[in-house]
Amino acid sequence: MKPRETKRQDMIRRETSRDTGRWNTVAIVGVGLIGGSIGLALRQRRMAGKVVGVGRNADRLKRAEEVGAVDVTTQDLAEGARQAELVVVCTPVERIVDTVLAAASECREGTLITDAGSTKRLITRALQGKLPAGVRFVGSHPIAGSEKSGAEHARADLFEGRVAVVTPTRSSVEGDVQQTADLWSGLGASVYLMSPAAHDRALATTSHAPHVIAAAMARSTGRGDWPLTGGGWKDTTRIAGGDPELWTQILLDNRENVLASLGRFEKSFSAFRAAVERSDRRRLARLLLEAKRHRDAVGN
Amino acid sequence: MKPRETKRQDMIRRETSRDTGRWNTVAIVGVGLIGGSIGLALRQRRMAGKVVGVGRNADRLKRAEEVGAVDVTTQDLAEGARQAELVVVCTPVERIVDTVLAAASECREGTLITDAGSTKRLITRALQGKLPAGVRFVGSHPIAGSEKSGAEHARADLFEGRVAVVTPTRSSVEGDVQQTADLWSGLGASVYLMSPAAHDRALATTSHAPHVIAAAMARSTGRGDWPLTGGGWKDTTRIAGGDPELWTQILLDNRENVLASLGRFEKSFSAFRAAVERSDRRRLARLLLEAKRHRDAVGN
Image 1 (cartoon, each protein chain N blue to C red):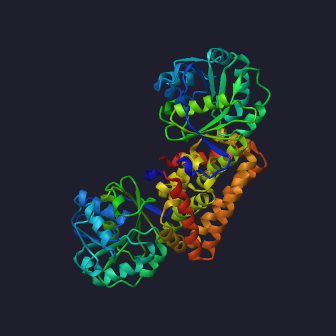
Image 2: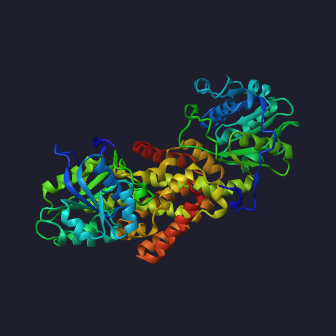
Image 3: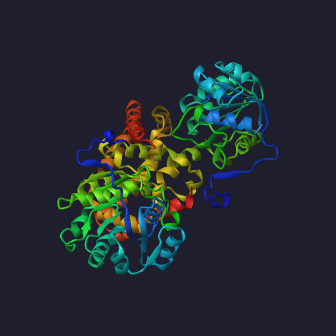
């Protein structure tokens, strides 16, 4: 989507600076689909001299190394953090705050830390004022997930043509924000700056509520009907295949915004249902046309 | 999906007979995505000596001919019907009954007529007892649509690996049912036999209600949030890009079943929402897991 199509007041498109990110050593904490794809892309684009994969699970670290997502691995966060100029925390949402704090207490002064979590407000707030002097943190969220997980599904082009949101706070330093933006630009994403709160409000509508709706649909489709599902049902419910534990964290972390978005959906849903109930042909066609216009405007 | 996975009592998988369909002349009435794909597949698989494209719009007929979906075209239904041994009616749902009756009054004795409509109960009922002696009709529904329309999107492999439902009634003759099943088997689909009523109940859940839900979601996502949509939102709302007029017809034709399916969805949706509202972590994780199990069982 081109920047001029953006109608949000609280979102700024950030152009890449000339100095696209180049780091000697990047530590990626959590080497699943997102972390693995960042590693692959950093290495293929020669944006990092060395990529260190950090994780708790030896098998998963090994897999990340095998697919070429990282140069070396360690289960010791301190060891990974100490050698890195940039630490990207790609753990499940619930572990991001603790992981950032742990990395911050071990890393060298001047290290930049960012994350890739699907929510931003609570994470940013929990970190506010908690980081040692000289350690820099700016939150991020690359909008490029999948119902798949694990480094074995990592792709170097996962972020190409996608959007990454960088979420500075009032105390963020411009240079840190630009460096964080350059990381994602360097990986091929278009970067938007938003406050953590604005990010969470928007993502509740564009990602978290849709997950609930897709899951509710999959759950209400009984076994007997499965053979009669086609491409429509499969597309509509695809994200319901995502990890239940990760999504529980995201939905509860962003609970109030999710409930507000579900409320807006339900209002829209009720309008459609009422039109069907009343066999109100003109109204139903009108509602479907409005939906189509939104969908067509977003594109594929 | 393999036949043994089928748990429905009212659905029978029909194997292809040895004599896979071979017709001298097939008339396809309505040469859009479905009609065009049938034509392409019939011609590429040499299942028809000649495919006649019938339609009201000269431009659309021309396009169908250009993409190789039909051998010849006519705007005169009578002309097309008279020369065909098989007539496949691929018009919008609302025009199927009239088109079948018009074709039936013009075609030769022994001609088999089928359709490709997304609903079956009202169509089959409206035709009951109305067809001239010697004209055979069995309803069909290939579950292979798309949000795209028009012969320019037709694909010879559209039905490969998909399901086609054939909907005999009590008065259907077994030989006619088998020939209809063989048409779809010949085009690469797995064929299931169901009553028109059972078909409509199932499709309300697997296709019609999902359309309403996807459309309600697209409609409730405001312009400001569009740049922040990712693959999840795009998948979940893809079918909302479908033709509003066609979908109005389908939803109202199958109104009662659609309302029942929407009710089941809403019950499931309310369970998710209540779990989010109460921050009931265990319950939410459980619901998401149930959804994931359904989705994973269906596959891609």
